[in-house]
Image (cartoon, rainbow, N blue to C red; front, side, top):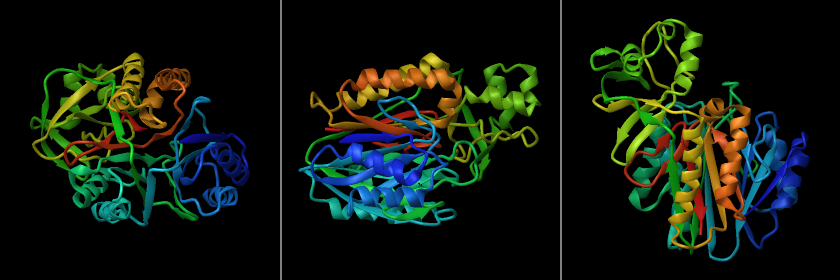
Length: 382
């Protein structure tokens, strides 16, 4: 695995420049590209094709790019994966809204073509503005079962909240899922960590629908959540104050594998008193009001990297994919994301890495679920 980055504003030249920098190893089997939303995805695809004709391409727009030179906005980051003992099969599914589960299942079928390797993982890049991202994960799980882990992220658009893009070869989508099943003779590991801790006892979801929680413990969900946090009076009715307050106090959902995090800062509802950001919050689920701060988020980022590396049992990774959340970036601020980059670099050492700030992270190693917010997920290739 090798990584190239360009901050050139011309999309074609940026893609070509980053691709050439990434082509340091033999037999490239896949280009992964993460690009700022201001870039023209069609021109990116053309630049990659000019740099390396015939190499499969998978990519998406971001809320910021991550690589060893530090966090960026508006760059093009290209990762080249390849060499012996490595195979790739890709797929793309357009127009996923309203059929997220079917789309996940369709994307996962590409794994059949990479079944000749002992270790496999399905990489998914989705439209971050599509609701019910969990259903994409569940659709893929329904095809692959528990034996193939899932990893990836939801494309961002720099908080414009208008449209993201996904790349598959020279095709560009704005409401799609693109996937690559990566097969390897060497082990593959996933690290998952977040810096949030429960504030008190759990709350029971007693009414929910369409990605929103309407009631917790038979009370209006927003009020029950704020009461549990001991929130100041002004955030109960002031939308601006509420949005700022909940940014660093997400909702946690109890799963068998632990507490998954749901971001609430992009979908506050002062009038209706509901909470949630479009994720799955089923009736009867246990939910927690969560707390954290800059240091806890930075510590979690480092732990996720360390966990992925340590799971390889002494094998030095050839590379890492490092995905963090746009909402975590908002909590950290500009100085904080630089410090996050330093923590990642410290854990990686000489290992190449690349990633982006997402609108949601995909990492499923156990159970049917695997969609996260405000979490660092790391994929290590042995």
